[in-house]
Length: 637
Image 1 (tube, rainbow, N blue to C red):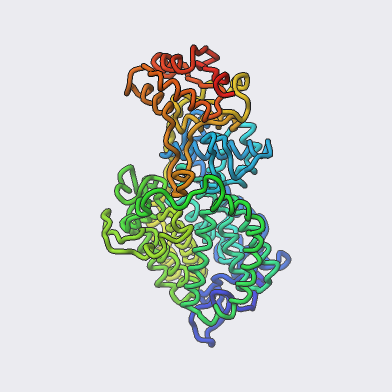
Image 2: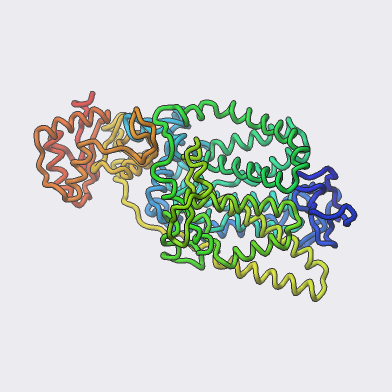
């Protein structure tokens, strides 16, 4: 193979793949075991010849489609269906994972995005949830770009199918994106790149977040963004590379701001680590890097000015995340345990180590931690390895929160994140998600180790074969226990035909409010999602401010008195008796909600008691399809 490399100094070494060696050392080649770390330019297609084995060629293969790329994509697709397959068995009748409310909220986000596209409405704020005050979508999860792309699927097949497709594609796309970037720009071996992509997408972090956080698992732009930052420091083509990076950052802005913030933090940690390891190189690369970042930042500001205003100053914006940040932090013991949805884990393996099943962002187990430490010690002379190790360690420490922990117990000893917890944006971050950065670090280190190991294997000596065999065995022993298992799926309460058939249109003007009974947060969202957010609903499932005068973040809103009354009757906590003052309040509440109708599913187990109450509040109702309906327009118009 003929290989063309850049001779310019790399951002993480004096020359591509450099380590702290004497200038008299031979250049990095497959034969001496020092392969390129970062700064490797792909060979032109006219001069490169792929190694049919796909293992540790003398340089990165030419950037073209091949059967190896297809094989990688198919394996990643199979892995994604392994994780999410139970949801696909019955998309409309099942909820995937252990956090059904999170899925319901994200289905509604996709339904509203389709509504906003087809009706040309504001994609960043709406009063169709939590009527009439509304929800600031930027201060929740955003997802405007995925919602836009998935609009045809949402309109044709429904929000539940769009959500499952989103979850599935996120895993495949993230894995393949890492494979693509690693194989074309970082490593010599496609096999090593395949391993890196496999871990970055199917580690416990992204599998656990597949329980209901598609905005977190949508990391398919992350490797491209990181590589473009490296290109800024390496090539010095400020305008072109800055614009490309800006376009990628702008796209990520509309996918998920939290991941974008973590990317920025990870890059900042990387630069600081590089400054510690190679200060002179950092200073020499600072000018093009800062100039390129300024171009990219300006582009993002131009595109995101209004959404940023909405996020930090718009209606229903919030400040901070509800509760103590340590409530969502990891315990140190989580790093040596196994996740609930890992082969080596189970229902109780993460107990006491993390808040819930979606935040299991570490959970590597002892074998993998020991292997990563061995990789860092083995390749410690490589600048990239040392920088990655520093970034991964700092991120792991931040993920444990404001105080140190021991086992499952939290101490009173301050931890480093205590210095940052009250800073803007940091106060809104779920602390455990710092470990998402550590997961990327581990994935890239494993890929680098596999790449170097395969270089050794090309020597084809008994000793080399033994080393490769031992390395492969260690890798399998470390990775098999963290391999994912299928997410559970549970049945969902059916949405009435009155909603799904569109019969509601004869009784509710689009944009006005339909009140489901009982007034339950998730019932509101499921009904609204089924109708693609054509009507408004009271309450909901979202993050918002405490009040119009207190922007402190909280979950949802307090129920109106009538909502609380109906819930109490539905749960058998009070008899179906209504006082005159409660009827007056009920009329005030439907006026507040701007409601056109109140609907009770005929199949509700306490239908008789609820009908008595609703008849007393709004007059006699009537049966329409599979609901009892009370027309409240005479009171609200």
